[in-house]
Image (cartoon, rainbow, N blue to C red; front, side, top):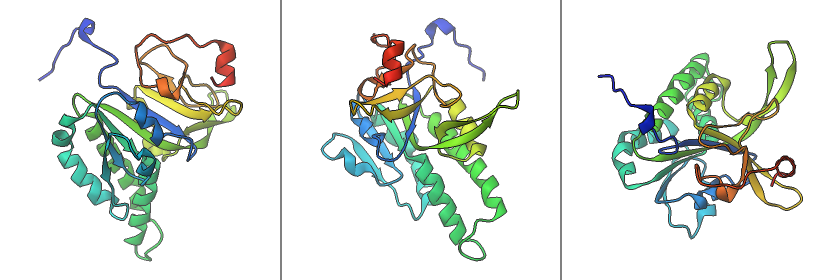
Length: 239
């Protein structure tokens, strides 16, 4: 049955869906400490060691059985996540790599991926994220490594753009479902970490939860709160 909701009753900062990406080691996983409330981490790449001492719960993931492990998690997720404010899916680039490795092991020669693997991944990943993003009353943070993709404009101009490292066949759908996509960077002068929230030809980013175009990593998850407006000079410096 179709449900009609008046837009006056919609709260855009409730149950947000955020994706952050960067080079390995920049601090995507450690940013979990800035989340408010109780957090559950689905550790897809065994990087939860950086969370030592934090009051967060971690699901240890068997990377040799990515498909079976995810099926089990998704079956239990609606019940498990009721006790949490935040779910972190860390990291989907690693998941994709492990999935194809295991599919290659099951191929005729035990190494190479077969043609049907690529179409299966497109459908499989879409189902994973649709189920995860359909969870009620919980914020979802997804992390990924970064890559550079060649993008061609309608006028034929070609440029390289930073984006989450995941196959194009699933990337556009994933980024479309997210409220925020941010690239985590380190200021070479100060060593501080910040998140770019406004995209351009060279960086894929977006923010439909508030008006910020960038934010210090420790303030990223304070969507809708009063923030100091970033000047163009500060934005250029990566502050």
